[in-house]
Image: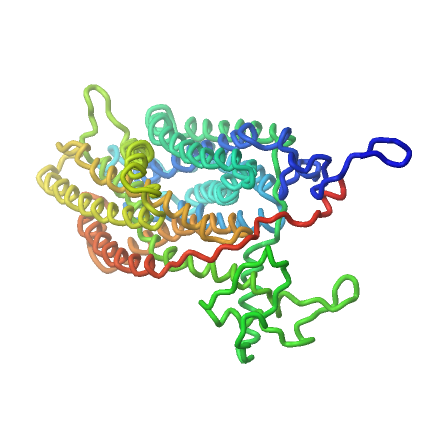
Amino acid sequence: MASEDGKKVHERSPWGGRDGGNLVQDAVDYRGCPADKSSTGGWVAAALTLGIELCERLSTMGIAVNLVTYLTGTMHLPSAVAANVVTDFMGTSFLLCLLGGFLADSFLGRYLTIAIFALVQAIGTGLLAVSTEVRQLRPPPCEGGAGAGPCEQATGLQMGVLYVCLYLIALGTGGLKSSVSGFGTDQFDERDARERAAMGLFFNRFFFFISVGTLLAVTVLVYVQDHVGRSWAYGICAGAMLAAIAVFLSGTRRYRYKRSSGSPIVHILQVLVAAARKRNIKQPLAAAALYEDLPGHARLPHTAQFPCLDRAAVMAGDGDNEVGHDGRPTPNPWKLCSVSRVEEVKMVARLMPVWATTILFWTIYAQMITFSVEQATTMDRRMGGFEIPAASLTVFFVGAIMLTLAIYDRVFIPLCRSLITGRQGFTNLEKVGIGLVLSIVGMAAAAISEKKRLTVAATNAGQGPLPISVVMLTPQFLLVGAGEAFIYTGQLDFFITRSPRGMKTMSTGLFLTTLSLGFFLSSALVSLVKSCTRWLGDTINHSRLDYFYWLLAVLSVVNLAAYLVCAMWAVPPATSQADQPQPATAADEKC
């Protein structure tokens, strides 16, 4: 349009640009201005994040799957102790995802969180490479060779240095892992049909890169560790991560950055504290009498479930207020919360029963990278003229994941669409259930295989490999691997789609804590069984690992029954229209 003096004036969109249709409503560019679709985000920006995830998997899995052989063969730790070191390391890695999510949401943002913690992981991996090379940081070899004479265990200082390296890596992994997938999806606009479809493809590519990183770790990296040297393998991981960081930083001007809505953990605590403070206040009969500060299109509808939390939204007069920045009274969020904020907490609460009943699967998963690898070290691993590294047996595990996903996507889903109108395959809860069933069968197969291995070990007292092929262990890897393909995708879908919009990063971290607690539960079970029974001895050939596997199978059957009850109780949350355009913000006014 034209002004009175004839000069052309561009009409400003409510999103701070001259053409509102080309701007992303809830994202800014590196300058803090509303993000323009033509110059930010999209596949190019999202692809730059995938290298970080690939190198993270390469480092973490390359260390974890072969760490138990280093601890027993080089550091001379007992079998059960070595298994617990591995599971504690992996459990801490995933538990720290909550810390990474909290820092990303509250202070740093996803971009800085990824860059900082990726560097921390690279430093930790580099130090691990040095520690495995320095002779003084490991005990002397056993007299007469491994297993032939007395072995001196690693000292406290030697183990202390190893722990520092491992937990630096765990800190880096936990810090970046909950943000990488979220930052990748930030590069797509959910309100644009074309970009929304591209986001779905990004999830597929993201999981593919996870699988590729894991596959490289259990094949190439494990081979380098066993035949070239661990320090070389870990040095390669550190170098690869530094290269991935450089690639990631190169996209700084291209990325879209989502505006933070504050820490979801703080929001949850505010609701719990406000509800506890008003536990003796009588609730109004009508939900309309509860406090709400959001406009109609952005509100979450009130639900009757968990009425005790509704007390946080009960208005108690001036006692709920504090003095605002402008000198006027404003609601104190630790005393009075909106209905929408309360409903967000209710949505998280509905996730918890399913969350709790998926932990045990990851305890079973932990056996695949600890005891199952140790089983393989005692067996005949020759195929022709090539000897398979024990840790590389997990390639069957990764292969099962990739094959299961390929068959499901390319065969089952098209068949399901043609036979059942509107059906897009299994629901997320059905996938989780299938994964739990496969894990039970996998543990039964592991127990049967171990019984056969022990029978052979009882008749062969020699120091060499047992005359039984390692191929006998493949069923347990294939079954648990197929189970992971279902349960991982099902869990991730469940936690992302049924969590509040502003808590997506936290919900990803919550999902990853099931992995963490599964590893910690494995450590606790191993310690408990070792103290109460003779099933887990200092060496695997003098243990009854098959009994331990049967115990996990029985516990998993009980857990499956609990899961089925929780799955029937889990109700999808009510939908809202919170995706409507919001008023312009300070970033819009700036540009």
